[in-house]
Every structure is written in C-alpha cells, then in structure tokens.
Length: 332
Image (cartoon, rainbow, N blue to C red):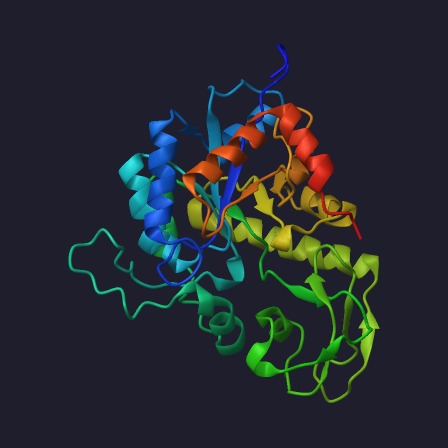
C-alpha cells in the first residue's frame, strides 16, 4: 500500500450458514479459524462507518462481518461458531417478518434436535405465500444476539420488495419455479401468465399491476414520486421497528439484491440512515460513498485460500480500486 494512503476495511457478506443451503457450518468455522489464526480482528459495522466519516483509523487487519436477511440458521449455526472465536457481526433484518416466539435451540445445545426447524431455502416462500415468518429469527433471538452476544442489527428494508423492471414479457409464469418476490407483486399468481424481468422495487420505478390483482393483465408504470414515497415509508418503518426492538439507533441498511440509485439514496437519507451496504466491490476508506459501502460476497465453496485472496484485494485500496474498475457491473 502507498505510504500515507488510508487503509481499506473489508466487509464480508454472508447469508445462509446451514447444512442444507448456503455455506456449511464446517466451512464457516474454517473461515473464522483461518481469520483468527492470521490475526484478523472483527470490528463493529458502526466503527467502519465512523472511520469512513473521518474517525479513528481501525487496527491493522480489521474487517467487518455482516449477514443479510436474518435467517434462522444464522441463530442456529452461525452464532455458536461466532461465540467460539469471539467474533462480532451485524445482521440485516427484513422487519415485516419480525415475529414473537421462544428462543429455538442452536447447534451448541447438547442433544438438540434441529431437524424440524424451518430452513432458509424455504424462508421467503413461507413468509410471503403462507404468512409464516418462522424461518427467520424471531424477536427473542434477535434481542439475545444484541444484548447477550454483543452483535448488532441493521435494516434490510421492511418487505424486501420486488418489482417488474420492464413491461415486455420474457416468458410465462410457472408457480412451481417462480421467484418468491413475484408473490409480493401480485395478490394472485397463476400458471401461464406473462413473466416479466424483475428487480428491486427500491432501485427501479418499475411496472405494477394496473389493478391490485390478476383479474386483468395490464401493467402500469410507477412514477419516481411514487417510488420515493414507497422507499421513504419502507426505510422509515424498518428503522423505527429495529430501534423499538433494540433501544439503539439504527444507522445503516443494506440494499436488497445490492441494487440502488440516487432516488433510493435520497430516501434513505430522509429516513434517517447514515450509510448503506451494497454488493459492489472496491475499497472502504475515507472517501468511499457512505451509501455504497463495498462488500466481499461469501458463498459455499469459498476455500480459506480464496478467502485470503479476496481479503488481500479488499484491504488494499489500490488493488480494490483496480478490481472495481475491471469487474464493476455497468449501471442499467
């Protein structure tokens, strides 16, 4: 790194830690074991935000751990492994699926039968189609993460809403192989109806059913003003519900599917957020846009050698910047 250049803080982005989807628990444990053995320090997301806003430079080999969506498997499998290594993380909550219930057993509970617990691969279908959010963490589990285990929460919007990006069909709907987000657009979904390309309802004005059901097949374009109103409502409700849950300020959110634009950023500012997590690659250092914090995507099959490679790029401002120029996805 060039002398005098401020260092970059990698932010790792995990989702599922589960034997049946995402990253296997043994893989996740291997990642944390490697990080601990090589001197890496997990710092709070708030500390990263403060650093980017001109605060104190974090210790060498600092990184932040984040999990999007707050799947139950984060409580069952990830949290016990985080405890074993003393690493703290931040978890992104979709607040429409906050629910009450007892703490469910985690993998550290001797003799616990985890076979009947809902799994992440079914989470969105259960929540959207059946009104059953139990494949996400409940309020008691989230409070325990914060109050007892020292983790943090951030917003991941209120409903994680999808929209249609175009009114030009790309095929026909098949309900047995359909993105669960489409069920959040329509009140009724039927086989054989036109299928349209989808995207984030926060980053695209989008096209929506002209009526609130599928009795007619017409789509209507949403205006930018309508999207601002929608985003502001979603972001504010998300922040207020998290703050009510934890009693602590909610400073950051993460963009669903990593998609954002200037309209979404303006709404997030108006809703009271200080920063947002993207899925862009690049450096996190003073000067990085606060509403486009860069993250390193972690998925199944990432070896410790590959983790080291990704961290070497993300922590070096020059390499991270070059990588961003080479591999940045063009904006639509």
